[in-house]
Length: 188
Length: 85
Image 1 (cartoon, each protein chain N blue to C red):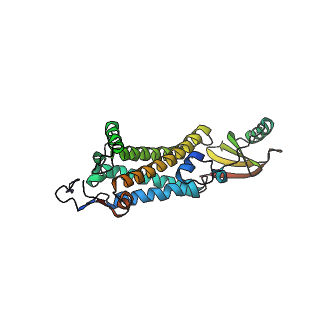
Image 2 (cartoon, rainbow over the protein chains, first blue to last red):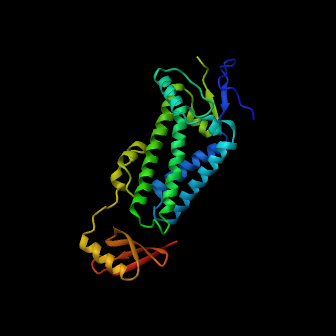
Image 3 (cartoon, rainbow over the protein chains, first blue to last red):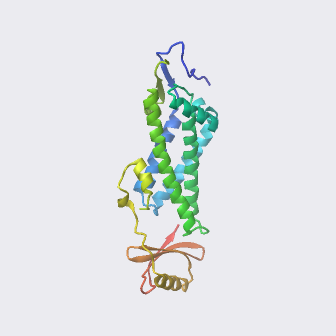
């Protein structure tokens, strides 16, 4: 599989790179739609809420498989979870150093893992609520709802982080998740 | 709709959280005991009681099936019964 170089020092004016393949993009926006449908629209005791929840689990499962076999930037190996890298990334942000990453940046990567894990935990706790063993058991419901709140907070932080990074780096990140192409400005 | 943390809402949408808050009023002990006993007497294993639309919603099990029962809090009478499938 061929990938373009991350930094195009030789041709700084043409910094367009294909980062997000169609599966990643469809996954991302489907997850947005299904998650918000479940949190804001659907009756949480209804059948639709359940099926949407299971669909979210299915989406995450597909994304996890894609994280091993997908295109290069979609693979987990392209954005390994690393607190050290996140710390360095944070200090680079604070000192205004421009940085480029082949996939999610290190802070973004941590958020992706957080969101994926939270979605799984929400889905599993929601499923438990439909089992005889945990039917009407309050702590399971509280776990489910607290996780959903945590997911909402995470989404807020995710969006804020993306918008901040977009403003800081002049790379239109939101558009990249729509078109798949990341337009990098010339390196200084 | 379930209660959302106002913080989460404020962060994400800034929606008025009050509109989404559920009525979380306490069920008095006497009423709770009356409903629980009445439902248990019919063979249900009671898991949880909630107030909903003037009735008590009871999460219960019977013969391996999950039920949502709507019970009159004064009489203990099961007004409506829903099997979860």
